[in-house]
Image (cartoon, rainbow, N blue to C red; front, side, top):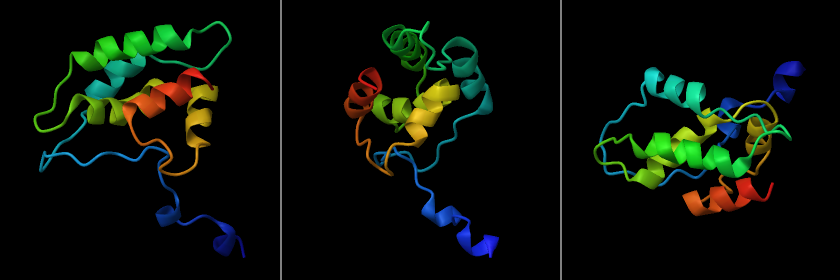
Length: 112
C-alpha cells in the first residue's frame, strides 16, 4: 500500500519555472555548485540577512557564464544551491512552477 501512497517522481516539480535557453547542451559542474555553497550559503536563520545573501550570490553568479544561457536563467538554476535548512524548505514548499522569473524569485524571497 505504501507504494501507491508515495509520490511519483514525475509528480515532483520544481517551484521554479526555468526559462528556455538557446544552449543545446549545458552542464552545471559540481565545482560551480561547491563555489556557491562555500561562499553564499543561506540557512534562513534570524542572524542572517536576505539582502546580504542576494548581494553575495549575485557577485558570484555574475562572474559565471554559460554560452547560450542568459544570466537570469543561470541565476534561477543556481539559486537553490545557495539555500540550506529553513531557506531551502521555504523554496521547496512553494507551489510547482510558481516562480516565473528572477524578479519574481527575489520578491518572494525577500518577503518570505
